[in-house]
Length: 387
Image 1 (cartoon, one colour):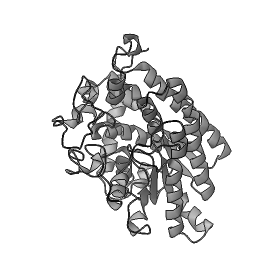
Image 2 (cartoon, rainbow, N blue to C red):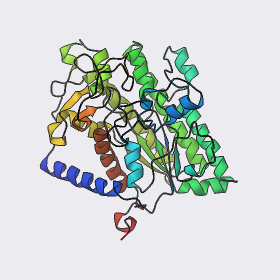
Image 3 (cartoon, rainbow, N blue to C red):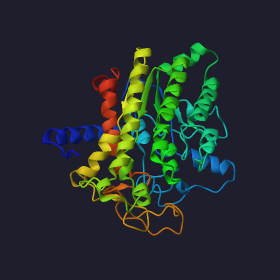
Image 4 (cartoon, rainbow, N blue to C red):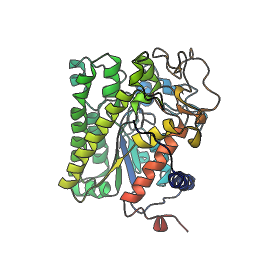
């Protein structure tokens, strides 16, 4: 495998973009002339409190996101996120001049004014594929049956409360940013944890990508014109999967990063197929702006050059316990029996072995935001930032 290093020009560019991103996320007024709302879909990478709200509304056991030390870095209390602070969607909302997206599920009033500038439909544990398909393939829906299709239907329900006609809906969607994911990670990760053969799991990839593309098509027909579609992270560097497959052949590990090469290749396969299908979608809908959000390459840099980006630990969980990767599948970060987490989450790439720290998400969000700036003409900073 080729080595990766940050050139001086790339490092300088990364610092500039990160600084710009910091300035933008410090502002409280819109910095764009493009969007009046943001709607997002996905799983725990994007969930800002839906699973927690569902559990409370149904008097179910609360998820780990309800307990400290989740939220300790930014919110200083649990905020429904599987993270010590903000997620990528939080940083993007801030940079575009929006408040944090409110979770849709569990709300007492689906027509509440809180959703007029956007809503978040992402639910921790959500799959792209529906629960009946997964159960037929012995892949459990561990925490929720709210698949991507269910989320899209919920969005349509909310949209109908804002508009009385299809033309009204199109007007709203024309100035909305749709963040479609990340989604699909649970379809794969849960299958890996069930011990399903990787050849069988690879067969899920075209099905997952098809669901993502179909969901985008459905929203395009309603009038949506701007999409941000994230790919998958390098799962071969995840402490949870490194723990599960610990003891694999040494040749299966990247000697430079300690990540499992074959798992990262799986992520690359998903991302490559997703990008190919997105390109076909662009051809079918030339007036629709579809931006691919690369989560893989910005993240893999942290494992190749951790010290240059401020990280001291790449493969250990900050909030975790046991083994070389500080991860125990039977103990979740946020439940009382867990050992105390690390003192400085910003020096860790991984928060709990599955999800990332706020520091990681912020750097990935910076790269994604740069892609938005390069891809969407109306995000002209000279016009967008108030004087």
